[in-house]
Length: 529
Ligand SMILES: Cc1cc2nc3c(=O)[nH]c(=O)nc-3n(C[C@H](O)[C@H](O)[C@H](O)COP(=O)(O)OP(=O)(O)OC[C@H]3O[C@@H](n4cnc5c(N)ncnc54)[C@H](O)[C@@H]3O)c2cc1C
Ligand SMILES: *[C@@H]1O[C@H](CO)[C@@H](O)[C@H](O)[C@H]1NC(C)=O
Ligand SMILES: *[C@@H]1O[C@H](CO)[C@@H](O)[C@H](O)[C@H]1NC(C)=O
Ligand SMILES: *[C@@H]1O[C@H](CO)[C@@H](O)[C@H](O)[C@H]1NC(C)=O
Image (cartoon, rainbow, N blue to C red; front, side, top):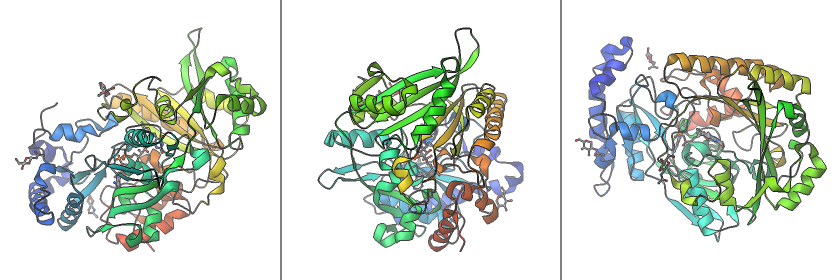
């Protein structure tokens, strides 16, 4: 553990133009801290939840849920305090006192935000950290569960499987993601084609609003309940917990992973993959994952890994693929029949056979620096264009692309049912994930520049007007506001990419529930109607 950071260091790290204001932070902080106990019952003391830089654990609590090393540097702005809520009333008190004293809050559940917006801001702020609020209460009889925001996906999957071998939940593949951020941003995973997004299976929620009241679906109203299922929770309130409807999964599912390099015909296979991928059985999801590798001659080449999951047995999968996608050449020995819980480990590269308790591990340090971007593809990319894409891709460093198949039930859900608009008419989504291990601005600048060049070169092949993006793959390059104000025109730039026509409806909900724009960040929804 590193030594704690003193308040003077924090004050000195703010930009010079703010220097005169800086001296007032300790006062702001004092007022905030003194306010908190007035809003909680004595039986739920809040002092045990408060960390300021003078507490020796401040730094370790801060970094425990920083998942991108890019924001684990000395010049990343630090919060004045962290409130690690131990009780729902601590969340209410934090909202009430921060609002009253004009202090910004950043809400953090699992800390996976790609741009670190849950734990950094350019103005004085406190982190409202929800990792302690993580109970999971499953009722198999009604096939539902209440899940608190601070629970991670691995815990949810593990707890479901403990109760039932034939239930699961459609959500992301990384077990340490927090459900607070993940569900409120949509939430997708390898059951997307069968069951859609996480938000398609949320039936109730508890939220602390801007006045510190706890609301549920009935008391918040259908418009706010709509907004938090894909519109990003952080614009509207603090989600305490979600009620989800579980989905049915078979006792055994089939997973596989096969590779093709360019020399082995990857271009043809990817071309064929595009033809079938949005039309094939809903039980099947195949991700194509291009990556730059060295070939036998020690030259750079592209290798595409096809990672698949079939909600059924391998025999059925093989006959399906022999008919519709023979180019993949999938063989019986490539297939593994596993339980649904084991499939969640397979997708995150935990070796099969590892005890499932590995999914509960929260102590995974952030080792990677990364930058992510996203795109949506609606039309088949020709073989010639795929060749052009590989040429540019070979110039990147440390980039992995994930091409995630769409179609299936996504085609049947209206683009206005939730704020997440990318439903019918998409072949696949691209994630561009660039990672590196070297500290310093030189490495950071180079990797980000190469990632942006790759993204620019993809413009002809992806959605246009607007060029769409996925909120959970947050990317500040596509438009942003300053930390402390939300300009509508600027918000419309990123808002239309994330939400298309749903942006204005989100802004109207925001106007009703948070007209003074207390809940804000660089990509939040502005109040407008
Ligand atoms: C390694 C990795 C793998 C990923 N894989 C997938 C994937 O398979 N599918 C997918 O859809 N996404 C994936 N993501 C993206 C992930 O879903 C988003 O980053 C998500 O927002 C993370 O949620 P969190 O609670 O961990 O993050 P946080 O950083 O805590 O929060 C993210 C955002 O939500 C807000 N927020 C958090 N909790 C609350 C709350 N309780 N109330 C209101 N607002 C809140 C934060 O303020 C912030 O704006 C992945 C990310 C990483 C780093
Ligand atoms: C942090 O320090 C303050 C002041 O000493 C103390 O009241 C508080 O309980 C400490 N926080 C924790 C979580 O230990
Ligand atoms: C959790 O993961 C980390 C990093 O992979 C590892 O060092 C640690 O031993 C794991 N903890 C447990 C309890 O498995
Ligand atoms: C936002 O902060 C900047 C300095 O970072 C300041 O100049 C500006 O006035 C602030 N805006 C609001 C609305 O507080």
